[in-house]
Image 1 (cartoon, rainbow, N blue to C red):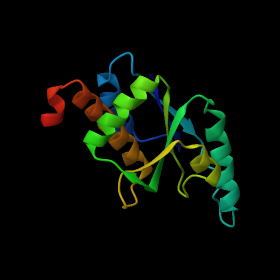
Image 2: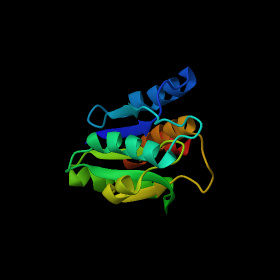
Image 3: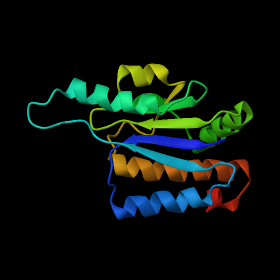
Length: 156
Protein backbone atom coordinates (compact mmCIF):
# COMPACT_ATOMS: atom_id res chain seq x y z
CA UNK A 1 0.00 0.00 0.00
CA UNK A 2 1.28 3.42 -0.93
CA UNK A 3 0.24 6.61 0.79
CA UNK A 4 0.09 9.66 -1.45
CA UNK A 5 -0.73 13.24 -0.55
CA UNK A 6 -1.83 15.53 -3.35
CA UNK A 7 -1.65 19.06 -1.99
CA UNK A 8 -2.26 22.47 -3.50
CA UNK A 9 0.71 24.71 -2.85
CA UNK A 10 4.37 24.59 -3.74
CA UNK A 11 7.63 25.83 -2.24
CA UNK A 12 6.97 24.92 1.36
CA UNK A 13 9.25 26.40 4.02
CA UNK A 14 12.22 24.22 5.01
CA UNK A 15 10.70 23.44 8.43
CA UNK A 16 7.69 21.88 6.69
CA UNK A 17 9.88 19.77 4.42
CA UNK A 18 11.93 18.65 7.43
CA UNK A 19 8.83 17.71 9.44
CA UNK A 20 7.27 15.75 6.60
CA UNK A 21 10.56 13.97 5.83
CA UNK A 22 11.06 13.03 9.48
CA UNK A 23 7.76 11.12 9.70
CA UNK A 24 7.91 9.81 6.14
CA UNK A 25 11.25 8.11 6.74
CA UNK A 26 9.88 6.39 9.85
CA UNK A 27 7.15 4.60 7.90
CA UNK A 28 8.04 1.12 6.62
CA UNK A 29 9.26 0.64 3.04
CA UNK A 30 6.06 -1.16 2.09
CA UNK A 31 4.07 1.96 3.07
CA UNK A 32 5.89 4.87 1.43
CA UNK A 33 4.49 8.38 1.83
CA UNK A 34 4.72 10.53 -1.30
CA UNK A 35 3.78 14.17 -1.76
CA UNK A 36 2.63 15.67 -5.06
CA UNK A 37 2.35 19.45 -5.11
CA UNK A 38 -0.15 21.27 -7.33
CA UNK A 39 0.41 24.96 -8.13
CA UNK A 40 -2.06 27.40 -6.59
CA UNK A 41 -4.51 28.84 -9.12
CA UNK A 42 -4.58 32.53 -9.97
CA UNK A 43 -5.81 34.60 -7.06
CA UNK A 44 -4.73 38.05 -8.23
CA UNK A 45 -7.02 40.98 -7.59
CA UNK A 46 -10.38 40.46 -9.34
CA UNK A 47 -9.47 36.84 -10.16
CA UNK A 48 -12.27 34.32 -10.59
CA UNK A 49 -11.90 32.14 -7.44
CA UNK A 50 -14.24 29.45 -8.75
CA UNK A 51 -12.02 29.12 -11.82
CA UNK A 52 -8.89 28.89 -9.62
CA UNK A 53 -10.43 26.11 -7.48
CA UNK A 54 -11.57 24.25 -10.61
CA UNK A 55 -8.09 24.54 -12.14
CA UNK A 56 -6.46 23.20 -8.95
CA UNK A 57 -9.00 20.40 -8.64
CA UNK A 58 -8.63 19.37 -12.28
CA UNK A 59 -4.89 19.02 -11.70
CA UNK A 60 -5.51 17.03 -8.52
CA UNK A 61 -7.91 14.62 -10.22
CA UNK A 62 -5.45 13.89 -13.05
CA UNK A 63 -3.18 12.37 -10.38
CA UNK A 64 -5.87 10.01 -9.06
CA UNK A 65 -6.34 6.56 -10.59
CA UNK A 66 -9.77 4.88 -10.70
CA UNK A 67 -8.65 2.13 -8.28
CA UNK A 68 -7.25 4.56 -5.67
CA UNK A 69 -8.99 5.03 -2.32
CA UNK A 70 -9.32 8.81 -1.89
CA UNK A 71 -9.65 10.73 1.37
CA UNK A 72 -10.43 14.43 1.11
CA UNK A 73 -9.26 16.54 4.02
CA UNK A 74 -12.30 18.69 4.67
CA UNK A 75 -13.34 20.79 7.64
CA UNK A 76 -16.81 19.21 7.36
CA UNK A 77 -15.44 15.67 7.16
CA UNK A 78 -15.57 13.00 9.85
CA UNK A 79 -13.48 13.45 12.97
CA UNK A 80 -11.24 10.45 13.62
CA UNK A 81 -9.27 9.75 16.75
CA UNK A 82 -5.78 8.38 16.23
CA UNK A 83 -7.06 4.96 17.24
CA UNK A 84 -9.84 5.20 14.62
CA UNK A 85 -7.22 6.22 12.04
CA UNK A 86 -5.17 3.13 12.98
CA UNK A 87 -8.25 0.94 12.37
CA UNK A 88 -8.84 2.74 9.08
CA UNK A 89 -5.22 2.07 8.13
CA UNK A 90 -5.62 -1.63 8.83
CA UNK A 91 -8.76 -1.71 6.67
CA UNK A 92 -6.95 0.13 3.87
CA UNK A 93 -4.09 -2.36 4.04
CA UNK A 94 -6.51 -5.28 3.71
CA UNK A 95 -8.15 -3.63 0.69
CA UNK A 96 -4.74 -3.44 -0.99
CA UNK A 97 -5.46 -0.07 -2.58
CA UNK A 98 -3.24 2.95 -2.68
CA UNK A 99 -4.49 5.68 -0.37
CA UNK A 100 -4.65 9.23 -1.68
CA UNK A 101 -5.12 12.23 0.62
CA UNK A 102 -6.32 15.48 -0.94
CA UNK A 103 -5.41 18.87 0.55
CA UNK A 104 -7.09 21.78 -1.20
CA UNK A 105 -5.85 25.30 -1.70
CA UNK A 106 -6.84 28.48 0.14
CA UNK A 107 -10.44 28.09 -1.00
CA UNK A 108 -10.68 24.34 -0.48
CA UNK A 109 -11.49 21.49 -2.82
CA UNK A 110 -14.04 21.50 -5.62
CA UNK A 111 -17.28 19.55 -5.55
CA UNK A 112 -15.67 17.19 -8.09
CA UNK A 113 -12.86 16.33 -5.65
CA UNK A 114 -15.29 15.80 -2.79
CA UNK A 115 -17.46 13.62 -5.04
CA UNK A 116 -14.44 11.50 -6.05
CA UNK A 117 -13.42 10.99 -2.42
CA UNK A 118 -14.33 7.70 -0.80
CA UNK A 119 -14.06 9.37 2.61
CA UNK A 120 -13.80 12.86 4.05
CA UNK A 121 -11.68 13.49 7.13
CA UNK A 122 -11.53 16.59 9.31
CA UNK A 123 -8.57 17.28 11.58
CA UNK A 124 -10.43 20.06 13.35
CA UNK A 125 -13.15 22.67 13.00
CA UNK A 126 -10.28 25.17 13.13
CA UNK A 127 -8.83 26.57 9.93
CA UNK A 128 -5.29 25.19 9.82
CA UNK A 129 -2.49 26.54 7.62
CA UNK A 130 -1.81 24.14 4.78
CA UNK A 131 1.90 23.72 5.64
CA UNK A 132 0.99 22.59 9.16
CA UNK A 133 -1.65 20.18 7.79
CA UNK A 134 1.11 18.38 5.88
CA UNK A 135 3.11 17.83 9.07
CA UNK A 136 0.07 16.80 11.13
CA UNK A 137 -1.00 14.33 8.45
CA UNK A 138 2.49 12.82 8.21
CA UNK A 139 2.79 12.50 11.98
CA UNK A 140 -0.67 11.01 12.42
CA UNK A 141 -0.07 8.43 9.69
CA UNK A 142 3.13 7.40 11.42
CA UNK A 143 1.40 7.36 14.84
CA UNK A 144 -1.47 5.24 13.46
CA UNK A 145 1.02 2.81 11.93
CA UNK A 146 2.86 2.63 15.28
CA UNK A 147 -0.42 1.63 16.97
CA UNK A 148 -0.98 -1.16 14.45
CA UNK A 149 2.53 -2.45 15.17
CA UNK A 150 2.33 -2.03 18.97
CA UNK A 151 5.31 0.31 18.64
CA UNK A 152 6.11 2.43 21.72
CA UNK A 153 5.96 5.75 19.80
CA UNK A 154 2.23 6.13 20.42
CA UNK A 155 2.70 5.91 24.16
CA UNK A 156 5.50 8.46 24.36
